[in-house]
Image (cartoon, rainbow, N blue to C red):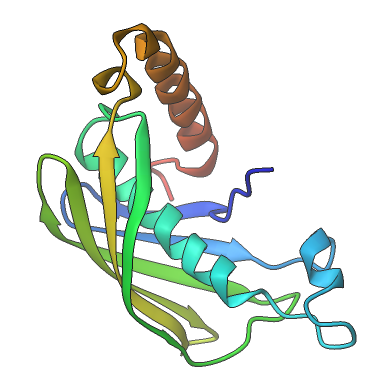
Length: 158
């Protein structure tokens, strides 16, 4: 199962920064077990929301030319507060370095104006066809799917 942990892109400057939101709902199934009687968004999913935000910034910056953006490294991760159902995680990420095969960011997540999580994130960038030429169609399908999702979560009028 793949989780989409970015509900809305609220600000985007390709090559520079992105702002996104993740609304936490009690309907999210993983909250039933984390933790019983004290539901909170798992820390790893807070980091994943930052990773996905960084990936959207990278896609917009590189004009969707890579089908695969994968977490290579999360450094200096700090958790400062819990995120409970009914709250919204506001993620801000700044692009630090955009290289041929990887891209680096600094990212923060806040809840009600208070720091909840922060990290330095490095993503690897690649296309499946780089490994096997017959995967070019898969690259195209993945990029098309990401463009479709992007159109749903971002409108320049935000």
